Image (cartoon, rainbow, N blue to C red; front, side, top):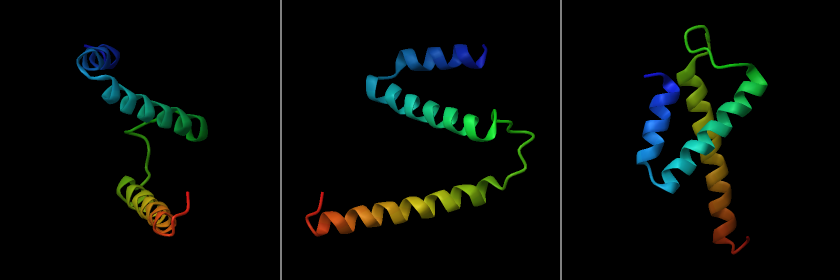
Length: 75
């Protein structure tokens, strides 16, 4: 099976919200493609673990900021 066939088969068995998650991931991949070109897993020399750690740290800051605003009753 091609990757597209596998994706179609998986999507057919998923619920609407699960497919929406896949759509969100797909949109992020397209954004990355526009910025960096097509994903090349074998040829991309970035340190993926370091990249992920940086993104998680950023997400932690964003979530903490949101939690602080909610604690103050801000929208």
